[in-house]
Image (cartoon, rainbow over all chains, first blue to last red; front, side, top):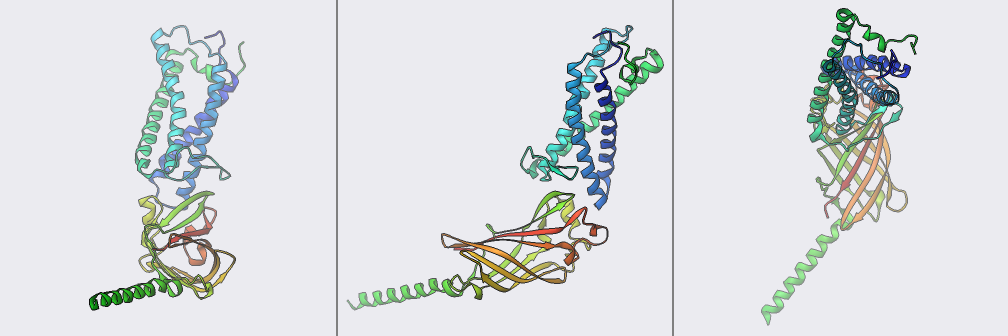
Length: 181
Length: 191
């Protein structure tokens, strides 16, 4: 921890950008799986995969940015336990931001549909088509996505609690603005 | 003695009959296709993603004359119900009216009209392809290999799905499912 009041600018930009893309991918994923087979459904699947690959790339950048810079200190009133829970949740979110898109990527490779990013670049298949694994991988992707939903809701609830109940200005750490340092 | 010569005569008879039977495939053969080793696959692009699928059931009558290839004939029938995209839900979808309309047109067929030798082990095949009640002239190259008494025919036939009305209504949009479809076949005959 340091005496900075905000995360590094690249981390802040990536946080909000990735958050937006994750929400889009989640909403699209939920809608597309319930649709009847149509050209729009196939289109949504492609968009969903492109979003996932984009998230994966940006999260890798974000992890590098996070590891190279220091996080701002937590508000002084927070107990050690609260800090541990907050840190643990953040680590788990990082894990999910890699695991959710990766599980989807492996799933689509197993199904025999490689990802062609933006319809332009065919990305390598990490595993050969394996129809027998399709069902399991789909379940894994769904479970991880739901875990992501719950963890993100917990993350948002915590931020709101700090803002509204504690009124400790914690959310400012991740808000754009002039650095105090 | 008499018995022995009788036997040997019978043996000779059998031998020449066997030779005759064995010789038939060399000039008049309707080859038997080894279904377990033969494949009809198709490849197309969906938003630029290459998709592989296959037909699990088809029959082929190939009357191939290596000495006089231009007199060869081929006739292939494909059961559209056996189409496999690797996903049960999509397999059901393609049998619908908009795609194959398999209830009304259960089979696709190809009948050759001409075969021209095109160098060693190669043939230029022309014929008519009928899918979903629509017939169109097609031509494509075929390579022929011989392996231990088996003949192996390989080829790829590019078609446009809309020629055969495959994908009607909203599926006419070729930016989603490309018009170009390649039918690949690998036919192995029984020795």
